[in-house]
Image (cartoon, rainbow, N blue to C red; front, side):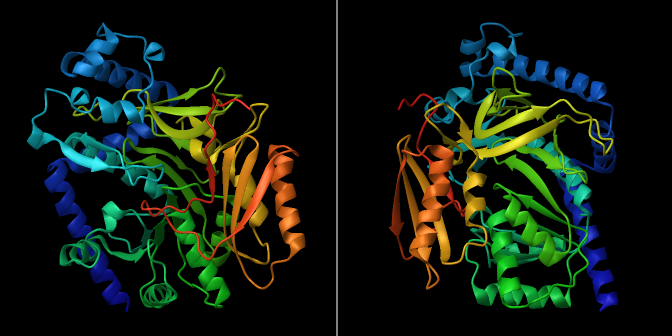
Length: 446
């Protein structure tokens, strides 16, 4: 067993070396070392690098992109005065956002999973992907990952799973030393098979959607299956990591969960360190909070991707709400800290007084509630919410009253809460479960 594991790790390391040499050139080890040195540098060094990259990007966008040339009027605009880039702008101005410095063959098409509606299509370039991968390699090491080490991947993005089962997918899994569990279709049979496989060939890390990871952990707990894998760490990504998700997962797997924040449009935005702080990836992007005071009042997150020259995203409104911290992290890393990540704007509720209520408040109310198998809360208006529940035999009228009161306590005692009993709450096409949905915008009156 140990010999087989060592051989598999060696094969995987060789595969990673070949892949990175092909994609990034023979000097990729030097490039990775340089990237790591920058991300480990004092904050003033990081910010100086970021400022130069930002200036260069703005000049490129003005010179080669029709949309930004018209918007900026100058090569050196004040970034704080540039209107945010909305998803609708990308759809309507798609061709004008593309840089004329890149041919059609040099553009790499990508798209979001569509968790907030219709998938968003855009272009990226090879350098963006090379730089993005170097940053992922660096940050994932915080959770114990390394080239060639076995990893369990529980993922659900359709763009990543569309070739699931194809021989190319299996070959990729082999040389990457990964075992994939389809988070899009987590059946008891599939989860049991994954557990048994991992018991035979234990992973060193797990990379997963939080909701899929929680579902897997719940399955193991309910069936008295105890993983003894001696994990170094667990990387949670692509969704909100709710506190009760983290609590159960860390109990079941006996390993720390490291929350990784990012998006297909802009790459890795931030990663939790061992001290639990979310550090911002200033090497690849410039992050702002659309708030009068980003250190005391949460606001929508604006991201400028510094490496994608094929289709620059400048002050892109990614759809999440957050807040900054000015503290220096006890871990010693100089990267700035994202103090709070409140999730999607569509998962953040609003009261009539303008108070923002994190969707996680509501999901915590359901943790450990008997009688509820599935739930979803939808804020239709400032005066009306819909609570959809899939119940079991332990559901009672007292449970209904308690949950309604919890919602009204947060949103207002006069808010009408309609409880709908359904057989199943479907997972959207993105593969990301939506427990809380708000249809109330910031400008919506009472």
